[in-house]
Amino acid sequence: MHALRLLFSLPTRIRRLFITPYDPEPGFTGFLERALSQENDRARVTVAVLSAAEARRVCGVPVDRHGIQPVFLRIENRSAAALRLRVVSLDPAYFTPTEAAGVCHFSFARRLLAFGAIGWFLLPIVLLAPLKLVTAWLANRRMDDLFRSVGMRLVPIDPGASASGYVFTTLDAGTKAVYVRLATVTPVGESFAEDATAAALPTTCDFHFTVPVPGIDADYLRRDFATIVPPESVVACDVGDLVARLAALPPATMNAAETRRGDPVNLVVIGTFPTLLAACAARWDESESITLATCWKTVKAFLLGTTYRYSPVSGLHLFGREQDIALQRTRHSINERLHLRLWLTPLSFAGRPVWVGQVSRDIGVRFTFRAWNLTTHRIDPDVDEARDYVLEDLLQARRVQAAGYVGGVGLRDRSAPARNLTGDPYFTDGRRVVILLAAARSEAGSRTGG
Image (cartoon, rainbow, N blue to C red; front, side, top):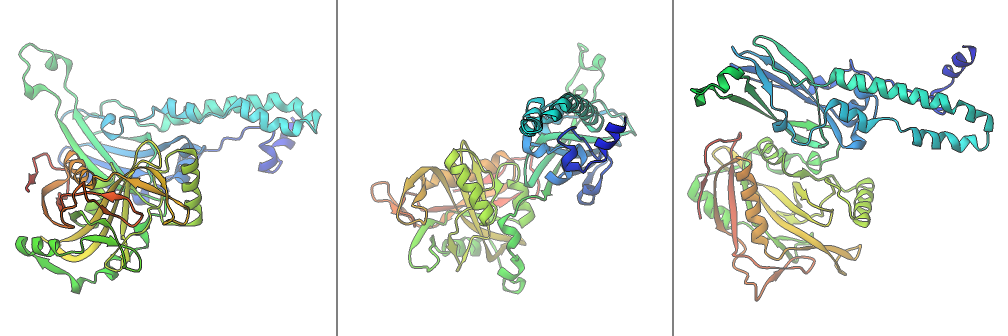
């Protein structure tokens, strides 16, 4: 006993060599300061997404390293029937509490290897290896119990009752879209009766949250939009004026010196910044600012052919400045992405700011003397496909109120393509797609025009 007391009195770094400590703080609720709530006559829902540091504190292990992100939910049932959380609508690839714990278990093999490095020099210490194994086994059991105790139970919530807990979702940083769908629990006798009607089937109510998550240095965090476009300089447009002004905007992006044209300006988005983030959050990733750390992560992803969802996006220029916000969709690797850059304009329509942008699809890499690292992403020359992809994607997300096309860079035929700043050819019908964003997900169809 004296030896054990002596062992536990050692400094933490030394003690870790002999035992496997597990010190979660399940009672920590500091993240609730950022919680968002929505309510209607059927339910009230509160949501908070934990940052990597907060999740480690609550769970006692770095769950983010395993691609896991706890989302805290509190659901209050105000209806006359039981409600059930449809967790698949929140994340089809969610982890069960036991599964999440199992992924994060302390590995006996890794612990023994770390322990054994010293054991070669201090052979008597190897006798404590069984203690290391036992404490790891005990820590894993405690981890299982904790994850199950704090996890959101997927059971009906009775009328007037409430339920809370964590759903272990896949990891998102920057901004996370959380879709909470609650379904009425219909008794089996009513659902399976021969004379059952559609009215007897479960009904649902949806709550859509766009939740900021601390953890990445998104490029737009360094932008002050009120300074970029002062409120007194905003020009309110009706439809006719808007179409004329959009068609008169610069046809293409430029280099920093504004001496050469780059990719075509082929996109217009109308909506507030929060609406823009909400519309894209579930489908596009934000881009981090260019720093030594993010450049190193980009290089590693490039060399290893892996993904880096928040990789910085190179700067293109319009209105004498780099893009105000960059979004991307990474596919199989960092070399296969869609890049979307947006600039705030001094125009407004229906009280909403107007953004213009450029979107292209990376389909590989190639050698070039026009970049400092002698390589550049090769874009799909059919830039209209990337432009129309954005519209299709937002239509699929039910975030389009209306859409149409205006003139832009002008026709560039496949037989005589234009070229961007790195020499990639592109062809286009020359038009810009204009998308008026819906403030919330719409169940009705959108208006689209030519």
